[in-house]
Image (cartoon, rainbow, N blue to C red; front, side, top):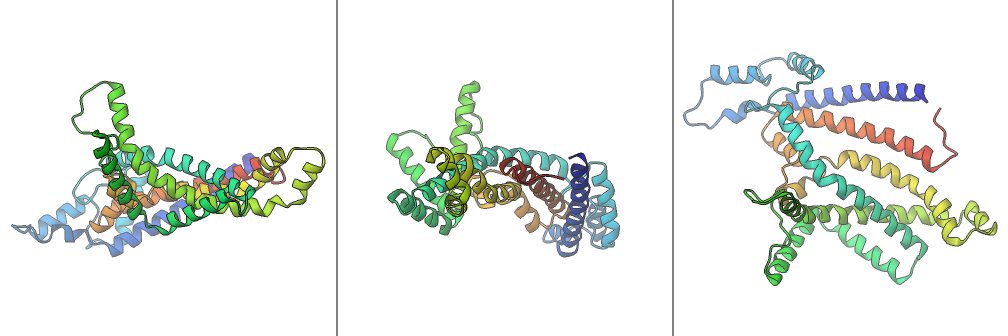
Length: 327
């Protein structure tokens, strides 16, 4: 096991280094931080612009490999550099990670769990009324763009708030600025802001995972080991949960692990519409503002999360299927 862990760690380090390097070089060659200084009145002189770009390691007149080496030395010391306007990438990265984690962690876990349960239930009750309801609902949600679902929920929230005469659902930002009150008041306010964006993500996760899990469950329901377990006297429910569902979870575990890594920057529309300033929003804003160091930092983080997700899925395989052994 120790050898396996060390080998995976070494390969993960190499892959992260390659992915982060490619992301930085592509961003440095394609983005133009100098454009952020154009159009100002009065226009800054070329020497002033070059000096500021040099201070932030963003000067396009400096060779790309030279800028890359400066960035690598900084990353080795835990410094991701500065944004195009001089702010610390580290500080912004830490703040944005916290925002995305608060929004995505519970929504991803709850959406994945409910999606697996819905899919397994649909497979067990194949072609029944509940299966048709879940199938149609899932395809409707999958076919609906995220921003349409988010705006629809906002409209429903406004209508509900007007009907009850109180702001039960809040749909802008993480919290109400300037709200006075103790811990309970603050906590309730954050939950009110968290509910709608989380619901958007949860519904999407349920729709996708239920389709995967239903198909995987149908593949194993007629397997020999399930019939053998029932022939030995196990109740159908026990045979399905202990044997069939356990094996059928393996494809969903793979999808869930990598989805969790990518979802950090995959909730861009949700963050934008509901005013949550997380990693997805920052990545898009960094590209549009030609912020090379920020784009490279987010790319490095995503590479780490994806490779960690792959390692986590390997461990889950061994837990779910005893036939799999890590050597």
